[in-house]
Image 1 (cartoon, one colour):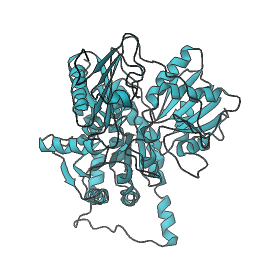
Image 2 (cartoon, rainbow, N blue to C red; image 1 turned 120 degrees about the vertical axis):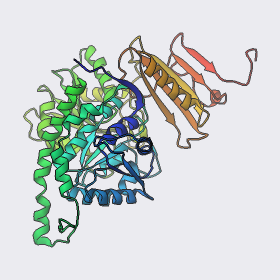
Image 3 (tube, rainbow, N blue to C red; image 1 turned 30 degrees about the vertical axis):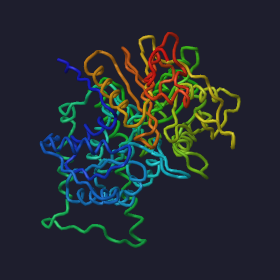
Image 4 (cartoon, rainbow, N blue to C red; image 1 turned 60 degrees about the vertical axis):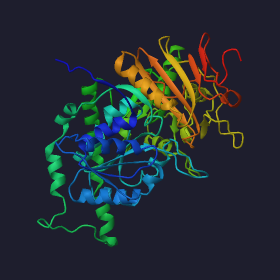
Length: 521
């Protein structure tokens, strides 16, 4: 008899923490936006006595810096405790020295990262892939989810794979766009995952713990004649990872009924133009692909889940046999490089492919720049040109170096059953909190699917906020801000003169203004 599905309304951080808690004995933590809620949830659950897979409460240690959290994690792993951490942005960068050691010593663990921008010409607290891309050389495997439901479904995969392969993992998803987006999703149950945990792998890890009973030599210094040889000895551990991760993706497919692979293909079976990307933009890309395929285009997408090690074989299998042109989209910028990381990986992977596709690359979504279906349509239109633009940007107007693609008009993608609303407020005025309550009440007490995303400016308290809510009868893939609302509420009268608050309001839509004036005035 099939188990009854349990739905909850939560954000991506909650989903990641929910699964991470199951596999964790010790959590070494330090707060940084937008990853802090993961550690807060784990701390709260431990305080309330929640048990992990091993029937224990997680031991929480808050350190005085991210470097301290990484050092504590490293020491805890050496002592044989299953240890996790939660971080982002500069916090992740401060962990890099320890990450090299943890990977080099083959200590299984998972860093849960809500991927965020790095400070360059200015600070930006919002989301893109710059932080995780700065870690791809550390020896950590890297696994990505693109939606709140995927975070729930797939976060167990790196935890299971790290135990089997001994290689540590970064489990990442887009900061804010996924970490803080509320969604009605199907919950992953601990009893679903328990049969997948092999006690032998945990015993193997524990048997390697430092103990006076079994003394070993670790952390030596090596000279040229041995260092290179020993460094290469880890290859066999990395060679196994793609097959192991694919195996666990298949297990998640069996549990959830949703199809998961290292590289997930979506679109026309005979697609000629294909985009390759990872993270939350894969959701609006689905909508754009459905829209274009209905018009008779032959387009598709490859969504990347396992980014490191990058499996050439699995990528080639995921691409349709008919592919002629590929656009690779990176959510990061590497000044001075010949191209961004994912673009260069794909070019390298397909250099000898018999299909010989034309490959171009572009940047999108830096600093949480909103990625809508119209932006994806612009990428496909570029691919149709006789000579597609390479090293392009999408989502901005670049009038300095002219990298940007022409803008496309926004297209309402939700069906007739989708209700969209926007609420303009002031940081700490209660608008965001009330909307979080509303979406949870509707999600948990009706059959409606729901989604809520809250855009802030970086001042947070006292700054501008806009809440974007959607409700409908079918799953919602619109991982971008509401552009064509049915309902708009403005809680700050002054915004009427500062922002175009009614922009995009649909015909017969409603506008509600919170004002000090009465109706006559």
